[in-house]
Image (cartoon, rainbow over all chains, first blue to last red; front, side):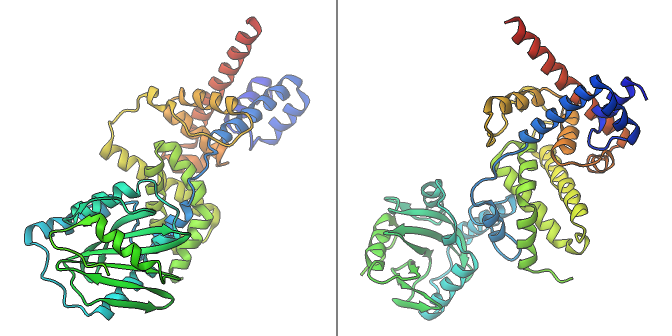
Length: 237
Length: 167
């Protein structure tokens, strides 16, 4: 073993030195210094990898895992699916107003909320832009971004494209659905700990539910109805 | 073994952060990195039966991230990498930010294959053989890459030290 061979081994795999090299490095002052330099270098290289993963990474991954749709992190497949839904809507027009009963819509929005728990995620700074984009693609116009909006994205309810959003007001999170082409009787939601209301106009329905939703629902409904314009009108109280 | 959402959550808890760091280093984009990790973990979940050995699973996942990145890169990006484009690297939590920035800048000046081999060895602790499997090459080739990478970085350290002495 000579210094050249030892340094070759040190530069190639310093953590797995053959015993002959390790012995030489212990006994040779100059090779010992080189070994120290290389170990310091490797620590600096490892530090370069030490990126802080974004806040909420594991939660988003779990939510977007098997049997869960991806929420506001659209893959190419997700974008293609959303685009195909919209193209189909443009080509064949929105289906006739739904005849699904109000109680069924209540079950549908609660089930979707439990399935795609966007309200458990941290606020997305892009939520206003997402809200505007989804509403416009669904055929509406945005007059104003709802105050306290933290998340917005597409979802499918009873086979129809809809907006799924989260609004936070006074420390409480509300889950909101805007459903074009849906007309249903005014429905009170009280299911599996979720309470809220579903109202509709001629061509759109809005659902708002929350964990402890009570008096705050009505003003939120009104502000939502005022913030989005459709070809028909939405009754709000 | 049956697969469930719980299995997927366990995979996320065990590997997501490690895979994200590697994916981010590869693509330098927070959103693409997250997509790469997502796709990789879903593939892993589908192959759950093969992932019982933790060490083997990690190497398999790293390989999958790398291949998925290359697949996307080939599909969506130019076929060559401009070294100047590699300058951006993310901020790291460290007491010595300047030193961290310096090593990143130096790493970015290395040939891509040399840098990747060195990061897999120094950052993840893989052996030459394991890196060779990840990078689809031979252990000898990996040995040459990490040798060149370390030699060049040490030369840069020495040159930097000489400049400081002269100043």
